Image (cartoon, rainbow, N blue to C red; front, side):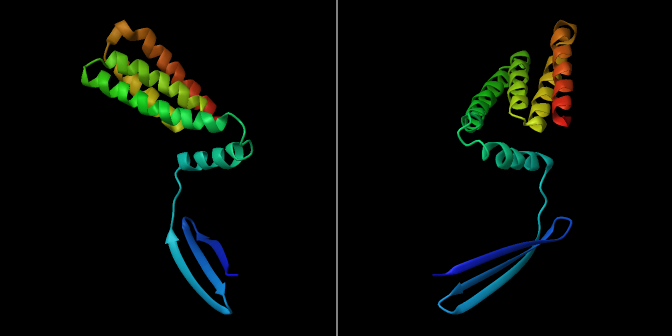
Length: 150
């Protein structure tokens, strides 16, 4: 039966070496590859969630929640696009605010911050008539920052 060995070594910051070895019918072949690879903070958080939360509790609703969030994001983005193309920045801001809350609940803090910031920019175009919405969005941004650092 063939045997494949894969070994990975960190050689420095963002630099790695991978060594492959295949043993089959008495013959041995090997190869090495060095490469640079950097993982963003959001990718690290996503991997942490997958390895620590999702895989630890495979029957947990988190599996369905992750799928549901992705499906919902598609529809939210469509709604935002329609509102913006119709010139309804207030409607777009409301949807962006709701997306930020959903993403914060899914611990996707960087994405939540982006949507909240977009909502804030859109609300601010309405001046004093959207003062409460602006303040609510600023409060949301602060809650996201606090949750992200917890």
